[in-house]
Length: 248
Image (spheres, rainbow, N blue to C red):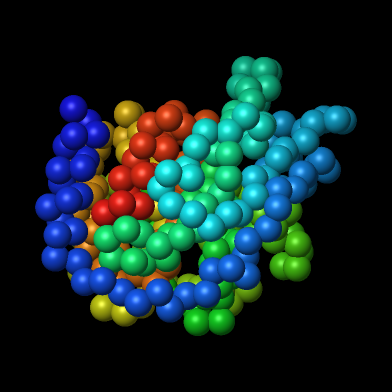
């Protein structure tokens, strides 16, 4: 029933979307996978000797290329126990099926920086839609952002590096909805954490969540999605990512 309602709402709200030209060159960020085996970046959450995280490759593709992976991409400590999570097999960059907007899909949220780099010279405004603010302070080297950023400080990095404007808008709860009126129509990066649709994130009704996303998607020069292992079931996140890829 959830996915039926999701698709029904998003299909209705995007029916009038205008097709865009493919104006963003995306091939430059394609790369193979790499490993983080030091006490840096997301590996700091559950690091000890021998522990490593795999950062999936970036491929060009479609919704059908979004699949669950087997590698450990995130760990956390809960009650003195290390919990390990797998994410998606590949990071996928392509163009949405409806409006032809460039879209990038990753698992750990700080990896969206790899896609933001495509537009970093434009200094666009960020619209952040998430279950969390992700407003931690980035305190590492600006040159080593790929390995030293974490899931909660990447926005601050992008501000410090002058990739995005400081006055970004964050939507994480009902009271944030009024911020829509603060938005002056302009090109944006639309950044969505799919844990916004987790089963325990029910404060904002589903229809309002999709209405919010569709409102901003019309102004997006780039849409970035994170499946956020540890914060939402990856099977659920992947189904939602495929629907967003299809309709936005």
